[in-house]
Structure formats: C-alpha cells, structure tokens
Length: 263
Ligand SMILES: C[S@@+](CC[C@H](N)C(=O)[O-])C[C@H]1O[C@@H](n2cnc3c(N)ncnc32)[C@H](O)[C@@H]1O
Image (cartoon, rainbow, N blue to C red; front, side, top):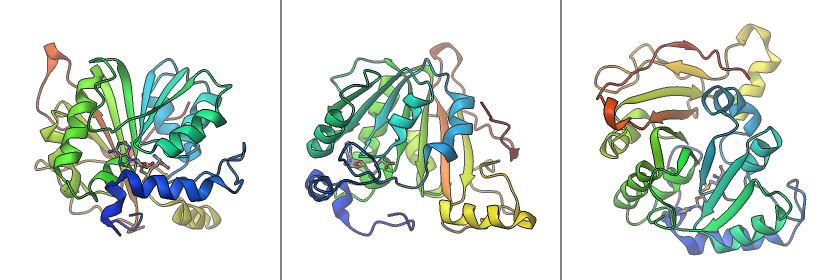
C-alpha cells in the first residue's frame, strides 16, 4: 500500500489486521512496553509543524485506525490533551490499551470506522487518518465502505472541525470521495516526500527544500500541470474543514508555497 497501490484486498479486513498485530505482539520492539510499533507513511516529528499549526493542543482528536503507531502517544507527549483512538482490530486495541494504561489522555475503542454510532454527532474537533482510508480503499466493499467511513467522519466533526487525511492517494483518486462526504468548504493540499527521500535531501544542502509543501489545486481539483513530484512516492495530506452550518460554500481554497507552520 505504501507504494501507492493495494497489494492485497485484505487491507480492508479485520482478520488480516488481527493476524498481523498478533504476530507482532510476541516480540518487544522499539515502541517500548513490550508492544512493537509500525509507523505508516510519516512520523509525528515530520507532521508536527502542520499539526501544531492547525490543531490547538486542547482539541479533542479522533485517531482513525490507530494501529500500533506512535502518533497518538507522541502527540500527548507534546501537549495534546485528548486523543481518542479507534481501530477495527481488537488485538491492537487490547495491546495499546495495556501499553498506555497510565496515560489518561489516550483512550482506545475497538470499532469499525464505517459505524461509529457509539460517538455522538459533532463531538470531535479533529479526525486524523493516516493510512486508514487507504486500507479501506483496498477492501472488497470499496469504495462504498470508504464513503460510509467519510460520512461518519463528517457526522462526528463539529462545524469548522478538521479531517486531516494522510494518504498516497492523488487528488484524482481522493477528491471525489471527499466532496461526496460534504467537505466542500475548504480543502487544502500538502505534499510530503517519503522519509527515505527526506533523509537524502537533508544530506545534500543543494537539494534543500521545505519538507511539507502546500499546493494549489486547479479549478477542477487536479494537481497543477507544473507540479512535478520530486519523490514519486510522496504522500498527500488533505486538510478538510467541515462547513459551519451558517457559512457553507463550495470552494476549494489552496495557496502555493511553503507552509509557515511551526509551533
Ligand atoms: C495502514 S494501517 C495505519 C495504522 C496507523 N494509522 C499508522 O499510521 O501507522 C491501517 C489501520 O486501519 C485499521 N482499519 C482497517 N479497516 C478499518 C475499519 N473499517 N475501521 C477501523 N479501522 C480499520 C487497521 O486495523 C490498521 O490498523
């Protein structure tokens, strides 16, 4: 999936993820606490400038398909006050609950993102998704399952709240789904090279560039013709803002240039 495609339909199946997380639980990895971690796509450190710029630490955050990533834990270490984690795999939820039993800012629920009726409407300031929509787009029920999940995301966000999607999906592959879920008011797009490519840059000052680049979409929601991906495996970050009931419009707003996000 990291290479921009579904390597198996199993990415959409709970049984696949349960088996994967069961086999990783026996050995103690870099995650500490006896639970291995696997970080898809990008680390908190890399995403931090954008997260800190867009999400106050007081935000109530929903982490969709948390897996055993360090993202939620690192956010709390950096001051975030409440990160609610869901995943379809009961195995990983049990592991993470046990690992973080002493961190009240982190809670874990086994849940299918296509039906999160456990949570009330408009109860989150932000929904973070790193790789979960991508997994669902590999499932047997794609794209229907993905649409159901996005409808749930839209329901759970408060007006003006943010869905931040970190994905390998290009605008051509993702925008229609986002529009269907009602994220019309404002979608910003950022492009981020893979960690491997970033480390190459950092060793060669002449190639130095901002790590996260904001990109303008064309009127019909495509990448501009002059946008060349230096790293063809780059990840896309869609920052989608839910309409305020009183202020919904249908525009796509994005400006080109380096993000000024910092603390
Ligand atoms: C590609 S992994 C990403 C894990 C983590 N977000 C990260 O960045 O490392 C996708 C995650 O989505 C979970 N998942 C897949 N389908 C799901 C669904 N329908 N509902 C909730 N979680 C799901 C999987 O169990 C897996 O942990």
